[in-house]
Length: 252
Ligand SMILES: NC(=O)c1ccc[n+]([C@@H]2O[C@H](COP(=O)([O-])OP(=O)(O)OC[C@H]3O[C@@H](n4cnc5c(N)ncnc54)[C@H](O)[C@@H]3O)[C@@H](O)[C@H]2O)c1
Image (cartoon, rainbow, N blue to C red; front, side):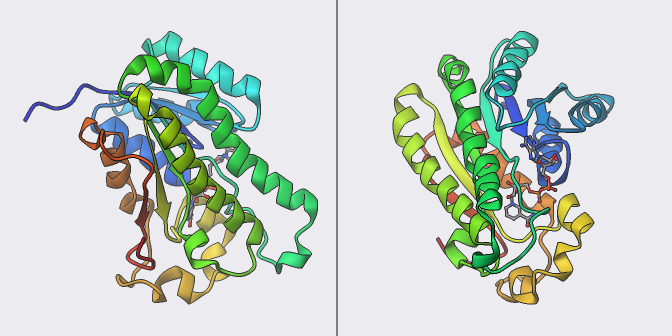
């Protein structure tokens, strides 16, 4: 079997956590990686280059239109085009868990801004290049929480529901341009941010392992093959879908 032609793929929030695991795996299977993050993008890209991969870092806030326009321009200048966008940056691990009526309007709007305006901004910025690619891929990182509806994180749950809905709408709009748009819904995952914030001890056993068919902790490495599939040429007839990768806590 001939390996497929490598793609140039931007991963937002790719400097740490699940995002970095995505970058490392995509680089290992031959793709060119652009790590876009608020912090640590250059260092993370240097780590991939040291391992012999093609990668650059771009400092970008996904909420900022100028930053994401520069992210797209830099990618095209460096690699000649863009074939994929992974909207992974999101606010989760730093959120306080609290009843919905204690969430302030400012907290609600901030979560919506990063988790929903961010993917929208990034998609708008890269779509001209994805159209030129002729095999464009957008993968939005949602979550299983809109399906399960856990308490004490209503803003986050609503934002990830919006990501799934956005995925479906964009899939219909972009299919004519040979761009697929899908979503991965991870279960509770022991990412860098989760470990640093001690969230694994606050989230409860049901979210963590007990509600799963496969009753063990989920690691970032559990997610990477799903992404590799969705960005592959072989997935060109799969669009608008949400793939739950969660050890079987929900069945979509
Ligand atoms: N960890 C989980 O249990 C879990 C479960 C389901 C879904 N997710 C989703 O997966 C994604 C990654 O989660 P994680 O646990 O690795 O998070 P994390 O907190 O460990 O890492 C998030 C990364 O995104 C970057 N980032 C944050 N805001 C940004 C912005 N405005 N612009 C650019 N970069 C920004 C951070 O700097 C960081 O590198 C998020 O979208 C999250 O909602 C996580």
